[in-house]
Length: 347
Ligand code: G3I
Image 1 (cartoon, rainbow, N blue to C red):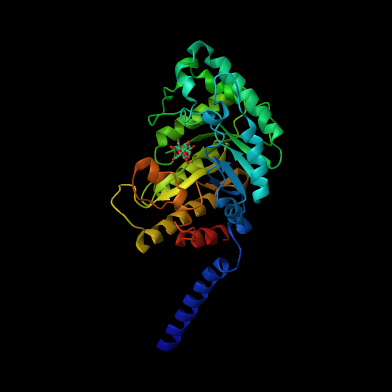
Image 2 (image 1 turned 120 degrees about the horizontal axis):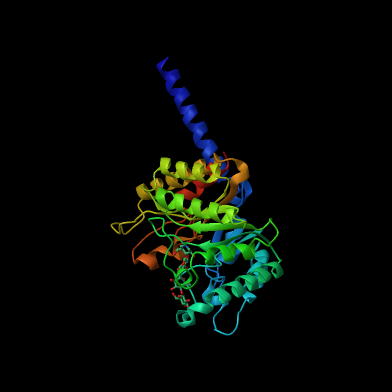
């Protein structure tokens, strides 16, 4: 009896193992099994080796840097929107299916000359910039653009509006004006408000939802919220993530997990990716996907991982520390999180 019990457990363990292995060894990748678009970003300044690689795994690409204002308005007297069509064409040639435009209006990566621009002319500038950007998106039709981060990170942690150059020069109306212009696009282009710490900080999420509700009450279109989700192994907790997902969808907004990466070294104490940290990271990736799979399908705009390999993550450079927050390692090999992520998408 005892032996039969052990055998049963062994068979069970073996078959579970086999199921797990089979999808990872099946030749299927994330884009083959995901029930919603699965995105990444490649540094858009110059497509590098990843160009051929990323689209094997992901079907949507978000523009990481190339469509930021410092690149599209490099000089005071002229715009430079060719990167829109260039990116659309290159992404298509590289094998992606969809493009997500990030970001139109932000307070970082602005052209240097904007700092001295007359404040009373900022509104005209913003209007003109948004109009030209909108036209450029329509002209860039090699690949399907599914959505646009119209305004990025307008909020402080306490939910008040950030005192950005836009806020100082125009006031809250800058947000309304940007969405007003993009609302003229066909509704197939989903319009997002994108921000960070929305699961970690419920006050900030409430403020984001109130902001979007206010925009809607003013007659403009906001279709969804982008939760960036630059998170770590401990925070936010599973229940905080679930609460945030539910709040967003219950208020009638599409949900984009728009910049997912999971730091294994948020406090700078580690100097290597141990197998323990990598296993915990795999579990956290699974947690996010499982929670995301539970929201109603019509709110699932998709999940975007903010980069392909740890080699190209923004985190080590920005915070001057070792980290390994993505699905591929420094050698561009799949990490444990990749297989777990794939299995979670395939459930
Ligand atoms: O433009 C210079 C280039 O001339 C130079 O050769 C190169 C050498 O390091 O640096 C280039 O600038 C860097 C730029 O990325 C392009 O690679 C900046 O130093 C670097 O700070 C910048 O980082 C970007 C960061 O935004 C800046 O705000 C990251 O790549 C990008 O992933 C990150 O993305 C943001 C999202 O847009 C919004 N949410 C947060 C997220 C992470 O900060």
